[in-house]
Length: 308
Image 1 (cartoon, rainbow, N blue to C red):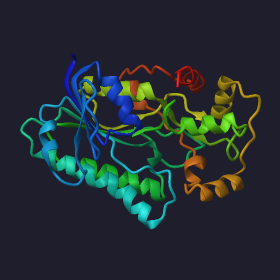
Image 2: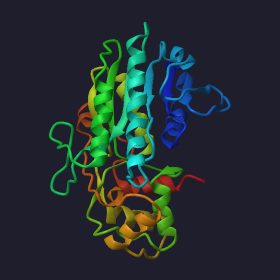
Image 3: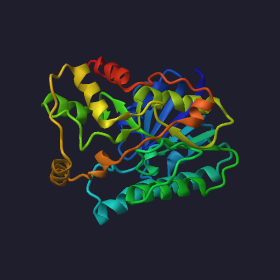
Image 4: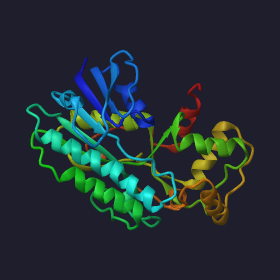
């Protein structure tokens, strides 16, 4: 095995499953910190934590090659005051807790990756946003990202390298946004959303996992790093790619007013659809990382080839 121990905090969700599967054959053990105990699956085991208090799980961090923090309430909800508080607290509190614990360990993890979000950048249709020249946006979702990253970097962990990985929209068959888009296509509703010109900064799930190992191997990398495919696509083009790959003859477009009404009915926020995220992975590319999938249509075809 290449690695001794990989820790996935808050790893019971979709992306945690992708990462656990990726590292299964690369590490002696993969440990998931989660609120609910799951049965041990080979070298993947779950330890219970609440993300707020120290417990027996603390010892598992000792000697880890990599800690990835995935904690956070799903933002696919209405931004009520209660939901806003939970969205922030579910990210900031576990991050502060991990920082406090790592600071006190004799043998802390070599690398701590905090999965944050590429939505921290402003709505961009005029020029791409990267780590050097990107401009921070405004609004609730950006405030969340800023507080999240502030909590991450505030602790001094000299023996643990830290990377805030600003993740784009992860595309995969079994989770996140892709199954929802595919369902729209299946029911003939897979046209553009709004004017369809908003950029989608996406990343294939296998690149989302593979790049974390690249970051582990390249010890000169730290700080802010974008995790998005190098060729963002527009909403209209992404929906067209899914229709073509699935074989759908047509897709009705969804005008802005209809999306706003639908968002109200299903209790989500239109921003998740309308914001133009044009983000580039400059530091990953400069470091020599080679993406498995650079074009959205290739990624979509690969995802649809996976048997359900």
